[in-house]
Image 1 (spheres, helix red, strand yellow):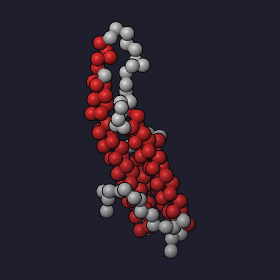
Image 2 (cartoon, helix red, strand yellow):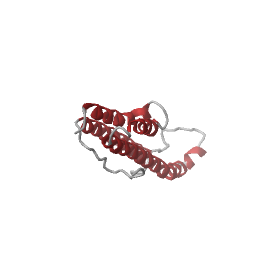
Image 3 (cartoon, one colour):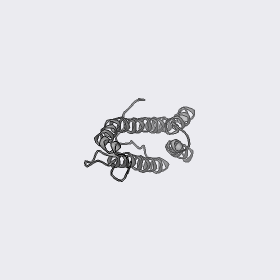
Image 4 (cartoon, one colour):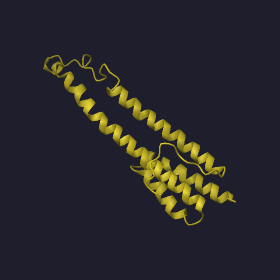
Length: 146
């Protein structure tokens, strides 16, 4: 049976994922440190720590890939409107950064924002479930640490 201390520690491991809002790579480093310091206390903490670290690494990878995919579309949108730079007027109201398709600046910005909201919701859900003593498994997670 899990004790209240184990549940609280598992809750804190999951909440440590919000360290990314405070400093770069904090969403990976902070849960990793918390998991490494608490994993020997119980198997429940070890499992929840692995889940939290794997989830945060996976979502960082997803956001990186979306950012990498965004670059060609941003460059394409920029050069598609290159003829607007030839005018002396430099009126940026005519410059279409949003492009006519979904994959413009607005589309990829929205996608990264949606990924961020999903990450926040899943992290809070995992923290609440682990506080109740449930062994939570994140969806969309690549198992880097087994």
